[in-house]
Image (cartoon, rainbow, N blue to C red; front, side, top):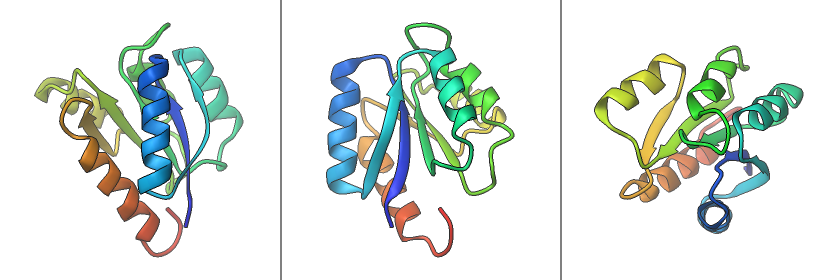
Length: 128
């Protein structure tokens, strides 16, 4: 199965590297990306049911990933939202989970865990 993924990341280099890595190693198909909270919320809300995974950075060009998480709280059951941030402190992980994040990964040392998470979603029986 291919994991239809939307990326919310404002750093072009990180975004391009992340997309390349996930497409190569984890059967991810990037549907698109946003650099701001408003663009992310607009796309995700306008494409309900068309994506399997959203990967959200906390610090964006405008707004924050916390606002994106909040907007995704009413998403369909099979859709996953994860946070990928350099600011994955214990308190921030707790806050993200409270807002509905399915997982939180640190950019500096948990990329492999994110890849494994994506692979596991692809291999899970039934809808992602």
